[in-house]
Length: 112
Length: 114
Image (cartoon, rainbow over all chains, first blue to last red; front, side):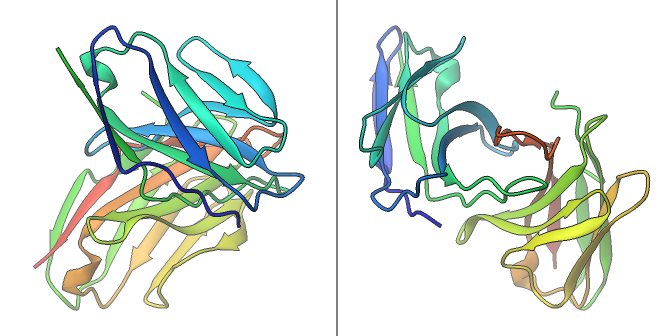
């Protein structure tokens, strides 16, 4: 399983764009990059998944360079409710689903 | 609301006891996963079932066991409980098909061992 490295914490203000970068140097050819969000005492929630280049959905964008050794989750115009832990995962697709290996995550704190 | 339900929400028990945690996956999801989250260990994958069969094992202790029933609900059995087993236990489900790694997590069961 590819190991991921991400900052332990980040601070931002409401209305700012937040970029969280994750390093995954030993990512394999078939691996996907996936990000989850977790609020205290709740289960993680899927944010976005990508393989290469850029992926965008209604809540975030994911940028993956050509070598795929890192990725950046971009949250546009954050609000107080985006304060949470964000996990970067590298997942290898397998038949019947995938087990997720969570790292320590990045604690994002958004202030007024 | 993820569509995954877990019961009970809270469980308080004593060391040496046995408990059963229950999970109902989202309608149509064939894969069920169990995770343990504690302050010192973080979020750890325990075990995965797909359509009734065990598919993957993580850091699950021998005192713990799980199964997935024909109606796809799953149970996690924890026995000979120790203080260190106190944690949040999450169940997640996914379709188990395709390339998405999206798992839907339930609200969790908070286990306190006294």
